[in-house]
Image 1 (cartoon, one colour):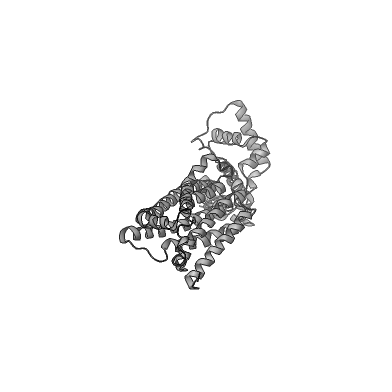
Image 2 (image 1 turned 90 degrees about the vertical axis):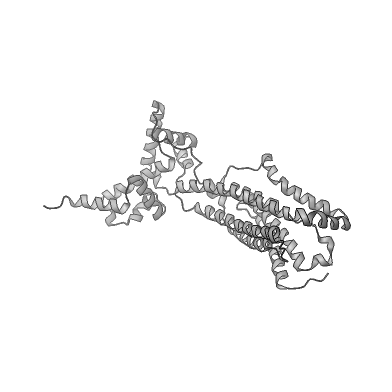
Length: 381
């Protein structure tokens, strides 16, 4: 077998080799081990899919027709794999079970079909190509793969949206690491889907079948991004675990509570102030519940129903009160606004300004001006 060493052959061969190498690295990397199993399979299946383009440009199909219908096509698994990768990183308690197996049945049937064809004679496969695959299933496979990828990308975006809401409520820049990586990951796969859409349109409308399919170009790009990005990520699951559990929507106003809840609320407020727990920039509901020696759900219920706010709004209210107290005391003479905010528990300037305006109804700078005016006393007539 002779393989021409052209630029496309070298590029596709290198991409496939990198895909296999990245699969091994992701499979044995301790950080994000469970999630990386999905990503490793996705990278491996992308590398296998590139084999079709490699066999074309390397003229292997022309020299060895038995390479047709090799079981290297698992495009119906692309969508489910990225979806479960996303769920594993954004839902620390998520575990793959039998109820999720059906998501991979189409990919299993896809692979089984190619394994079946490999067991048949060359004449059978040749007839299948000309009478079934080329006129019908060749295009149908691409369209079904495209539809599957778009469907699961949509489900993944919904997961990211829910995670984004938790991050925004938590006001933590640390958790945006996961958010930015997953957003970028879905963006790259949306780019892949767009290339597939172009290829599907070319096939169905203009009967255009390029020597190197557009899908191969997009898959190569996606493979590079997924392989490099997945290997470089830190332990993202521990980042998600640091977020407070998703809370129920707080009441529009505080509900009447019984005497037991009133005592618990008084203790809750007292510990937050006395121990200045709000000063901890990464304070979570779980941490606060441990300080109270109470279940997190019970603490969340007390705050939501008794005070009519979410846990993070409860914490930020104390932070804003602390900032106001220091501004009233004249600390702004020696410290910057950002320094005072960080001491109160805020972890960034943008977070501080957004939260302060939300709770106080004005910007920190405007509030400081009012404090300065009051300190000067009424203007002389």
